[in-house]
Length: 569
Image (cartoon, rainbow, N blue to C red; front, side, top):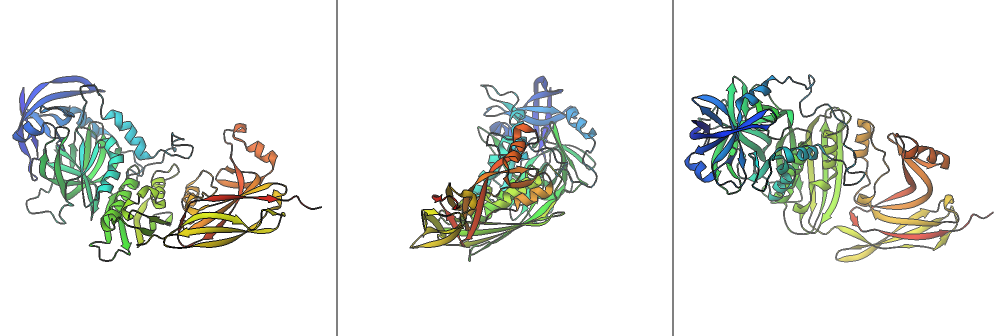
């Protein structure tokens, strides 16, 4: 049997390509067949299968068979797999499950994942969960001869730095989304002749970032009924019910590759929203709108740079939002201040939430290889955004994110050289002087003297005193049991530009039900041990901490011991 398909090879208007039916793979996926086709077109003869053509409608006798959607990686023939239109149409019958007034993607929270391989405090994020599920789903027949898998969705990014693209790729590529610097940010106003509605064979983009930076995943429209649009013939990220901005897009070129050919495209007219991301199709509704979170990043201390003020809008979904926000910050630092030189920085971030107020975070640091080397993963606000958008308690609506980066182009840090006590032995209840020698670049060391009270409980013992950077000291905080607990934990930390002196005390404390308990009697500690109850406490040692502000970041740590005499009768 012979037929034809429609897809955009250049510009915005679909073109016809010829199709020969090769055969049908029965039950290729659960309750879904796959039609194999050979395509004929000058571009497809060299490009074979093309990322971004996913969803191109295939017709036989002018009847819609389905969507061009699958291909073999490294295949050297234009053989593709077609998802039957019946499977795609069936997805239109799904009812909306998101409660009224709530945006899909905020969702009703689910229980937090348990400890993973990273250790007891390592939390698997929603993005990692989704990526791990799709890693297998997107390559269902992996063999030594290659994989017949959904065509990768090219995520064309513009205005984004190389490091930021790499940062996105780490998270998105396992989901079949391939970020690449191969597009522009689009035009502020659609050019004359740009279509006003989606049409079969036209290009559709799902826009994740817009403004000074752009990122949009491109595919093709399969079927249109009024405002309802089916496309791709496979999932974008298989996120289910969502609300992500959609747009008409323009194709600049189809780049041929022996591994993965793809369309170079950019959005040209925002139109509707992606509302369903299902195994056999995506559904776009022209009537819907999707929330975009405004974000502004300003860089100070970088005079003369072409751009120090960046404004973008970021699509919201709990599995994607933090990584998208991080890529914006990475771009601004690498692009505006990518000098390979010494720099000290203060990053002040404000996360405006609808019902928790404004949450503020400050990171102070120094780098020897330029601000472009600062990873978003090291920023406290990044973890906060990630935890808030994917928390197990209740939805948290984020309305705006503001980040101010203050740069100082010098090696502004201290390092701990040594620590010394004023005496090697002391009586309980007395005060000793702890001297901390701090080295600095191109200047003489300085010494800070810190009074340390010797606790009476240490009588007859050896007392350990440790000095460490504030950024490495962790406050005693119990696992959150409510959204208030979580916000408290995220906004509680020791300053990065301070020393923390830790004195380890006898006895035990416990973290339980969102509370921190110190100096517990032995009987109470025994009763709270985890083995006594499935709701047991996490036991910890008693410590006393002293914070010493320094005004600049400190690196290194050291410790010293003090002998404490017996109490005199």
